[in-house]
Length: 396
Image (cartoon, rainbow, N blue to C red):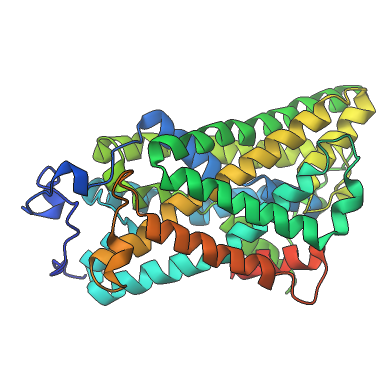
C-alpha cells in the first residue's frame, strides 16, 4: 500500500472544476490550453497512436505464430494497461497524465523521472515510424520511386519534413493539429480493410498463401524470439498518451474511458485481422517489415487484377504514419510542459504561446530532438539497418 500525497507544485491549469486536483484557484482562460478534443477526436487519436501498421508487417513476416502472440500480448499487456489508464484518468484527468499519476502516488521526483523516461523513449519512435512511412510512399507512383529504397538522403529528408509539418500544426493548436490525427486514423483503418478484403477474395479464389498448422501457430521459445515478443507487446502501447492532454479534453473524466473502450476494440481488431488476412493473401516468407503491408496489398492486388488499390493504400499508409508521429509529438510534449510548470525543467518549458495557447517551446524541443535521431540512426549503416536499429532502440 502507498499513501497518496499532494505535491507542493500543482499545475496552475488544474482548476477548481476538478475535485481530484484540490481547491486550487484557476487562472484566467488565456493562461490555460484550449479544450479542443471531444469524444470523436479522442477515439481517432487512440486509433492513430494505438495502431501501427508496421507491426502488422512485422507480425506477418514472422508467420502464423504471430496470431497467438497478439492474443497473449493483448491479455498480458494491453488489458492491464487500459484498465490502469481508465482508473487513473477518471481519478486525475489533469494535464500531464503519467506525470501527475506518478507524482501523486510516489512524490515529485518519481513523477518527473517517469515522465522523463517516457519522453526520452519516444525520441527514436519518430524517426522509425517516418522511415516506415517513407518506404511505403515509394509505392504511390506505381513503382517509379523504387530506386530510392536505399537512398539515405531520401529517407532523411522525408523524416525531417514529416516531423516539421506536424510540429507547425500542433504549435498552431490542437483544434488544427487534431485534424491530421483524425484523417490519419482513417488512413490506418482503410489499408487494414483493404488487406482484409483482398485476403478474403484471394482465399475464396486460390486458398491461403500461407499454410496454417498447429506447429506454425506455436510461438517460438528461442533467445531471438524474445525480441519479437517485446515488439508485439510494444505494439499495444500508446493508449496512455491521450491522458497527457487531460486539460485539453472536453469533460475528460467521462470522455477518456468511453473513447478508450471504443479505440481499444479498433486497435485489437486491426492487429489480429490485419495480420491474419495478410498471411492469407501473401506467403509470410515474401513479406518484409519496412514495406510489408503495402507490399502485401500490392502483391494480392496484382494477383487479383486490382492494381489501382496499391497507390491508394500507399498514400493512406504514408499519411497515417505521419499523423501518428504528429499525435505522439503533441501528447508527449505535454510532459516537459508540466515539468516546466513544476520547475523540474526551466520555466520556459511551462509557457504557452501568447496567441495559440500551446506549449510551443516543449513542442519545438521534442521535434528537434527527434530530428537528431533521424541522423543518428543513419550513422554507419544502410536504410534498412537504420530502421531496424531505431525500432529496437524504441522497443528497449
